[in-house]
Length: 302
View 1 (tube, rainbow, N blue to C red):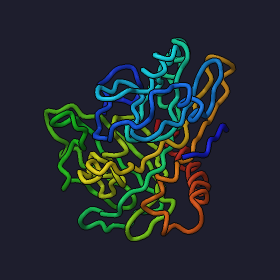
View 2: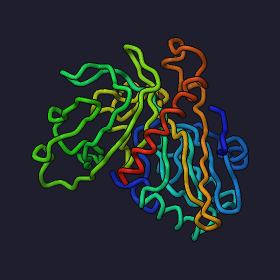
View 3: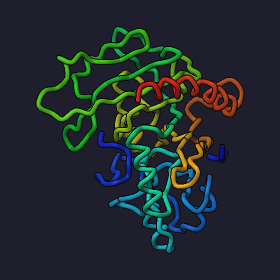
View 4: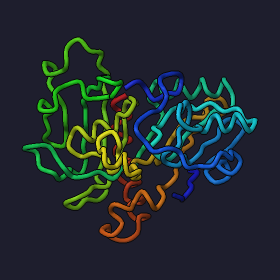
């Protein structure tokens, strides 16, 4: 495992609209070599894996410089195999040739890539279900695209049924006459108190904004998420969602499984730092133990 410790359309980066999810403007200077040195997690002849800072777009930012444009301007040609939102930090996998990009895109499309995120969420809860999260949970809520291209659950909020660690809606409650995207997210609770929870999240499907929408609609929005917190958007608060681990197969070589990871920076832990027991590294270690069970569940669901 390569590890670095620092700070509704599908997620494959083969099209789609620019990342305009309400994050603050990028503050990273337009110096690709420096960014590369600071953020590289793994590099070989086929791929470059970076630990993307929060509030920097991977590609297609209409209002600021994105990482792929910086790389191109510096003479390096890279293709993202997937996307994470601008406000999300963490592991991003970049292909260095078209054949490798095609191999990775196929893996994402058939859901054989292992993906794990860490999130700090607020414990608001849904009416009638309480605010505490279970040890493990499954969110199976279809998504759709609503007004102003905002991703939402394709059902009325009041129709969401929660119990036994599972949130879903009945088929008859799904919105008619809109295109819907079946979506499934697994999570385990790493730590919680009355105000916040730290989760390790394993998305089974890979829809745009899936984790952010699923968690918000079950009453546990991600801390600092500008999609659901206007105050956070105006203040420039850190969105506490981090792409933590990614596992893929080197199909262009000997087929070996590679897992890369990057731990969150200090800013990620700010909302809970004064209340968690011990150091953040201890929570990351616990998340790793919980992830194994989620990964097995995700494999059986493919």
